Structures are given as C-alpha cells and as structure tokens.
Image (tube, rainbow, N blue to C red):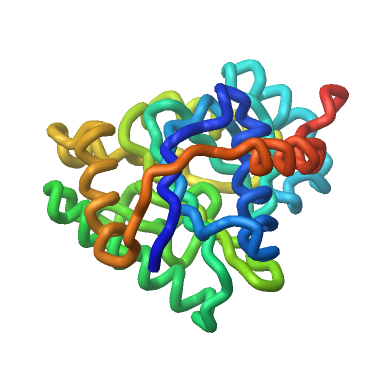
Length: 249
C-alpha cells in the first residue's frame, strides 16, 4: 500500500498534535488525502481518556499534570490516562477501511513491535502487565514486568487510526507524573510498571528504535516522504477544542 510518511509534530502544541491525528483520520475517510504513517517525538503530555473526565478527581489530576510540566489533553481514542514526552515516539497509522478487524490489528501490531524490540536486545513480550497504567491486552512489555508500548485505536466510517506510544527513555519522569495523576483520579495501579526501551537495552536510543520500527513498517507500506498540508492543519484547528482541557479544570 502506498502511504505518505509524515515525520513532524505540530510545532510543540500537544493539543494540536492530538487533533492532527484525528484530522488526518477524517480526511482519509473522506478520500481527501492518501493514507498516512506519521512518526514524531511529542512534547510532555498527559493524554486523558474521555472516561477520566467524568471522575470526581479529574481537576486534581489535571492540576497534577500541569505541576509536572505536562500538558493535559483529551484524546479521542484509548482508555485511561497515559503520559509521554520527548523521550517517546508516537506512530500514527491512518488508513482507509480495509475489512480488517480491530482486535486483529492490535494483536498483529503488538507482535510485530515486540519482534522489533527483541531484535534490539529487549526481552519483549505481548500482554498486559499487572497494574499497568492505561491497561491494554496487547501492550508490549519487557520481561512481563514493565510496559514499553501502548496502543489505542479510533474507527470512523471509511478509515481507522491506530496510534502507538513507544517509551524509549525517561521512565522516572513519566512514573512521577502518573503517580500524582492516578492519585488524583482515584485509580489503582502499580508505578513499577512504567518502563523504557533504553533501560532494557542501553544501546537502543531514539534514533535506533525509530529506524528499527520504520524498517518493519516498510515491509507493509511503500512510503513517500510528505508534510502536513494546509488542509490537514486547518481541519486540526477545527477539532482542537475537542481535545483541549478547560483551564478551569
């Protein structure tokens, strides 16, 4: 499949970064642009699930995120709160509907990602770690002990968005903000479940992990370098408010 490869964030605006992914989803669904594989390093962000916003401690959790220097956002896909920053990589696959099933995609992506990490020297496995943040059946973990990659998906008529967050370095910083955020939300979890690829394979930095994962994507897609277009950014601007946390929260 021919896809556009976009390697760019949204100018350091975490809310717009989330909105861009959903703008691309809308445009691909409407056949207004080619399918996209987007890879970028995000700014410090706590991405809250919609369910989190209904918890009585949501405002406290938002304040905790901000106190740690993380921008709170509301994502359009996924479960509970997740934290990521410049030590992470985000891969967004935005594809036209192809008849595949969501569970099949989650499982297949996780198994491919685990295989890539094993090639870098990580004892990578697929499955939920007990007590992990934003738990998922197809998380990629190390040694069955710490979470390294989490994924979320959103489906609309005509297209799907599958987004993976890879923690490469900086686990202590993520653990610290998540401890306070989850305390605010009143959710039980195990802070020891936060891991990073670089802690499992010290030679695996951001560039190495990105290159290894991109090589795997290249076995499935024929990629052409591309940029975010004015249409992409205009649609993201229209969606931005959906993902922004009210400053009064």
